[in-house]
Each structure stands twice: as structure tokens, then as C-alpha cells.
Image: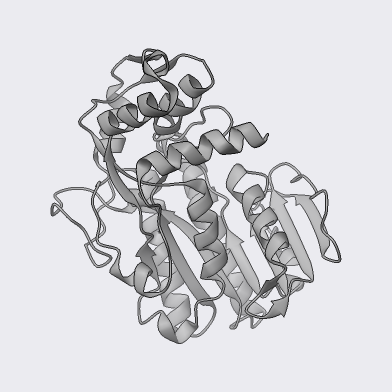
Length: 323
């Protein structure tokens, strides 16, 4: 079993690598080869056992960037590489090149090599939705993204679905809720604050919340997202139906409820480290994302979400303590 991961140097890619190595097989086939790709060379896993691991730095927007990667005929491709929301909004050309053009090049490369059986799993986003929406959405709610990032992901979703319909790849699009709590430092994603208002105070540092506390987000922990990515490689193609994109099961939670959970875990002193400085640019992007979903399809296919938001915060604290 040969698995290719783009965006493999990121925190999600690195967790996925560790999860796959720990599992050791996919669909009953032993994991034999991992190809890890990112703009900078992804870290080589400390203990890969008998799995052959190749880490390479590559700009996936360059002509022919996919050739050597796809010539190895991977059985599963996790396409995690992306320019995040605020960065894609600030630089249209960059967002189109990375988020859309590179994905199209990936799919065409698979088509040209006859990789019809390759499971291509792309991470999409709640940002594909927007505009006037029902109170609760489902997977068939019309996509009306209100950002360039959401538009680029929506175009990729349709393209992957069409290539799958034609039998050119075995595609799967997992729409990710906002991932909370991300480790590390804030990034250029509009949703970055959702992690920083928890992560920094739990580490004794100040954090800024740029949105109103009544704003509601649809969230999922990093651990459950990685479990979903692994599971996505094992869902039977004939179980996916005629549309290959759906939302993973998340939790609907307001910023106020997130701060309440922070206080329960870290005390009043942690909550007091959060200040409020409105940022209309971030608010406009994040408020366009819906906060409530029915995720019947994902659940029927065996994808599992978090039990509650306090469990997400507690899991982060445990991970931090474990080093």
C-alpha cells in the first residue's frame, strides 16, 4: 500500500503520518510506502518500521510537479496542501494556483496514468457555504461561498466529483469543520483565533478574540479529523453514492461557550487572558460560515465526531502534558 500525502509538513499532515504508521495497514493491506510532500521537506518519521518513507520539497503549482509523484502509482492520495482562508482572500492568484490549479493538475495526472482505482481524498471546508442559509444545513445545501478560499474549494469539489463520476479516480471530499485546538502558533487562517483564544491562555499567554462572543462555529478536534482521514481511505466506493463531498460530524459551539470551557479547564485566570479587539475583515469571513449541520451521511459511513467541547479542550491539555 503506497500512500501520498501533500501538505505533509503541516500539523494535520504530520498527525496523519503518525496515525497511518501506527495502524500499519489500510483496507487490510500492509502499509509499505509513504511519500510526503510539502513546500519545505516534511520531517522524516522517527520510527517508520518497514515502511519506506520519502520526504520531498516541491511547489505543486510548477509545471510537471506531479509527474514523479504520480509515476509511483499511489493507492491513496491525501491532498491537504492549501493556501488558507485569509491568505487566499489577500492574494487571488496564489489561492487559485495552489487551491485550484494544483488540484486540477493532480486529477489530470491521475487520468493520464490510468489511476482510476486511486482513492483521492481532499480536505475541503465549511467555507464552501455562505449567503442566505437555513438554520441547519445538510450536505445538499447549495454552495454559495463568500470568500475566494471557499470558492476555490467548491470548484475542486465539483471537479473531483466529475472525475469520479467518469471513473477516472476514486475521489472523496471531506468538508472539515473548523479544527480546534490547533497546536503551534496562529497562522493566516481566518479561523486561527478559535484555537488561539484557548491555546494561548492555557499556556499562560494573552490572546485576542476578533469576533463577537455570540458567533457560532462548527468545530472538530484534530484527533477526530485525523481519524476521519484514515477512515476515508477505507470507505467502500459503492457506499459513497453519486456525490462524493460531505461534511464531517462536528460540534456547534458559540465563542462564549468556548470561553466557558476554557474557564472550566484553566480557571478564571486563563479566561482573563482573552481580550476583545474587533476585526471586521475576519468577522466578515467567519460570519459567512454556517454553525449548524446535519451530518447524516458521514455518520452512516462510520465517521465519528467529538462527544462535547469540554472533551476537546481536555484532550489538548493532555496532549500538551504528554509533550
